[in-house]
Length: 260
Image (cartoon, rainbow, N blue to C red):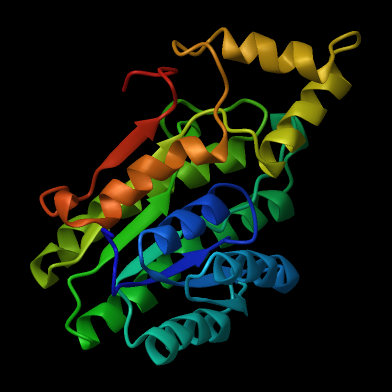
């Protein structure tokens, strides 16, 4: 198993892409810390992993809170013996027209998707360095960070920041043997996706959720929207030894939606 003996901390692991990644890492032999702002969802993810015969612990973690970030890293160190892999998957989206965006809604997204991600990355990197681990840090960005989204400007801005943070951290931490990279998913069927879908349907009389999905699928070269499981292969690659020479990159996993 490619991750045997390694310890992975996955934020946002209670649902969506992060949950799929947590399960995949466990299947490949990693001990997994499932961290999520929804503690019950985190526990369900960890129970499912343990039921499959792997090792996992759950933790309620709000990445905007320093004490929660520190507790997550401490649990990885105490339960697993160190931290080898950090997946920054926690994130939120506010779907609303640009002219309706408020200071509060803009800042709330940046607090989680940018500040929370960065300081979780920092805490994880410190633990990796202290434990002399040649770690892997994987940030979940989005193709929205490359091309913008008119119905969620704050989300797109936050994901552009994630791409930039990935580049900077990749450079800064490479000398410590830590590889920092990111994944930019495209249209993925998650709870976030349903929020965007609901807004589109509400704003366009006569358009159903299926109509909306079908229209977007036609923009994808692969001809379909993604499921969270479609992101797993890249997350496994970036966590493994084969990605040792990949530094500061953001890999689009979007079925051929954008080409930059």
